[in-house]
Amino acid sequence: MTPRKRIGILTSGGDCPGLNAVIRAVVRSASELGWDVYGFHDGYEGTLEPVSFTILDRRRTSGIMQLGGTILGTTNRGRFVAKSGHGDKSLVDPEIIRQAKENLEQLRISALVCIGGDGSLSTAQQMFEAGIPTVGVPKTIDNDISATATSFGFDSACACVADALDRLHTTARSHRRVMVVETMGRYAGWIALHGGISGGADIILVPEIPFNYEYVIQAVNKRMSSGYRSTMVVVAEGARAQDGEFVIKGEHGAGGEKRLGGIANQVADAIGSKLPWETRTVVLAHLQRGGNPTSQDRILGTRFGAAAVDLIKQGKFGHMVSYQGYQVGSVSIEEAVGQIKRVPPDGQIITAAKNMGIYFGDAPVKVPGQESA
Ligand code: F6P
Image (spheres, rainbow, N blue to C red):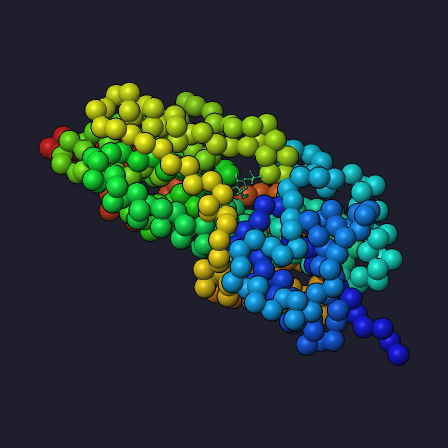
C-alpha cells in the first residue's frame, strides 16, 4: 500500500487575523485528497531541532476560522532571521536551511505551505532553491506585498482603525480635542489610508507623502477655528516629515528590521505646542493585529488555503497564491518578494480623498478667498 502523502504547513512572521482560516482550508482541502497535514510550530523554527509539530485533521481545525492569531504559533525572531534592514533581501544561513530540509525529508514531508509576509516568503524562496518543494501564501496586515492586490488581515486591521476612530470622534467632540492616532503598516501607508478614510479622519499622514509640520498645524488651526469641535489626525508609523527621518522605537523589530513607532507623539507635541486645543495621542499598535478576522478576511484566507493545496496538486512549487481582479491566482515567489507595495501618491484613492478635503500635510492649507484662480 502506498503511504499517504504528507504536506507541512507553517505560519511565519507577525501574526494576522485570517491565519487560522488558511490553516483550516489547507487541512480540509488536503484531507479531501487523502493527504496528511503536519502543522509546524512557531514558524520555520518548528522544522529545526527540536522539531515540533502537530498532525492536523478536520477535527483539530474545527471552529478555528473565526479566531485571531494562529493555532500553530509564529515568530519574527529566531534562527531564520539572518539579515536585517529595510529593503534588504533577508538571507538565512544555508546550514539552517539544510537542517530544515533534512528534518522535513525524515518526516517524509513532500511539500511545505509557508504562510508569511515578504521576509518569510523570501525564506520560502530560499528553501525552494535548496530543493524543498514550497508554496507560499501571502500574509500581511500592512498590505505591502507586491504581486497581490490584497491579503487577509488587512481588512481586519482597517476595521480596527475605523472602530477606534468612531470611538475617538465622540470623546474628542465632547472635549474639543485634537486626536492623533498612530497606525501600523511599516513603510507603507495602506492601513492609515483605508482605516483613516473609513473612520472619517480629517488629516492622514502616510510614508509615501512626506508632510510639513507647519502645514499640518495650519490645517488643524483652520478646522478648529472654524468651529469644529474635534480634529482626527491619523498617522502611519512610517510617516515622516519632509525634512525628517523615520521615527524608530527600537533597533530590532519584525524580521530583524528597525522597529518603527513614536511619530504620533511628535505630531501631537508639534500641534499642542502651537495651538490652544488639547491634543492627545492614541497608539493602536497590536490591537490592529489581534482579534477576530472580518468576513472578508475569512473568505480570502479560505480561498488562499484551498489555492495553496491546488498549487501543490499541480506541482507548482516556488509559487505563491496571489489575488488580482477578484481572482485567486499565483505568481512565482521570486517575482513577488524583494520590493514592497506602497500607496501611489497620485493614485485614485488619494485623489478622491484630497478632492473631498482630507488633508495629507504636503501642501499649504487653502484659505478661502486666497486660492489662485
Ligand atoms: O508587519 C506587521 C507589523 O504589525 C507592522 O505593521 C509592525 O511594524 C510590525 O509588524 C510590528 O512587529 P512586532 O509585533 O514584532 O513589534
